[in-house]
Image (tube, rainbow, N blue to C red; front, side, top):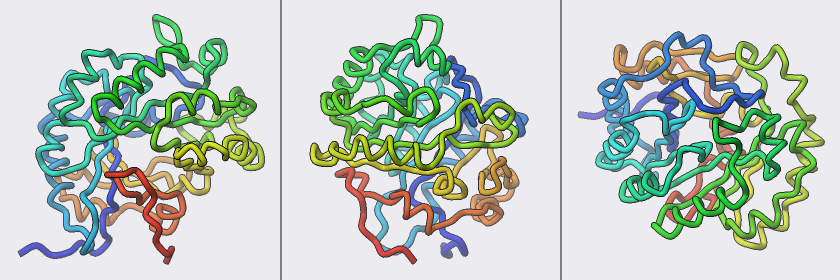
Length: 304
């Protein structure tokens, strides 16, 4: 008989499956310096996914969603197989990528098993992206390249989100025209977030005040009229409000502005590992972490 967990796992779990990335964004906090492992082996990852799928949910909850992230998840040779495995276990599947390795062939390959595609777009200016570090061997992606990938994914039935990290170099930009062309279902606007061991040493080069962040969000508020759901997240809302698995196969949280890890999930079980993590249901709901994964709309619930 299955018993409910003492602290329920939220409806979305982010799987940071690997550390490597082909970009070098200056404000990045996903280098997992303290994790001391660069990737989750495929068999271990599949055990974790299976446990997530089998973890009881609150009565009436929608299917749980897993988000494949990194590093850059498209550097994994088993990504399509991993997404397929999650899909086959009844999970809603999501991918967060910088888009540089997202070829037409890969979009077609992912389309049958991927529900949500999130592309991280921090600037529409090529030089700004170079300065941020959002540029690989072939240089930064252009606005037209971002649009073509988004449009193809939507044509194939994949729901599209965009993530943007607001920092000192892009805080003045206006994405309105681009977003009206791209028409993602959701646009997550994140304040650059300090994690001491990851970006703390030079965070002052990147961080923006909450006032500057809110000005950026307000500049784009008219996009709501176009049917795009804007999801602004301040640093304070981000800390301790995500369920995340690190490349070492442990849950981790950032509630104290550093990465703190549970015991390995496959060693102690998902319930015991999750019990070791600081997680705020209130902040999770305040940042609209619960939404209808089918339509993309927010679920309006009273915050406890």
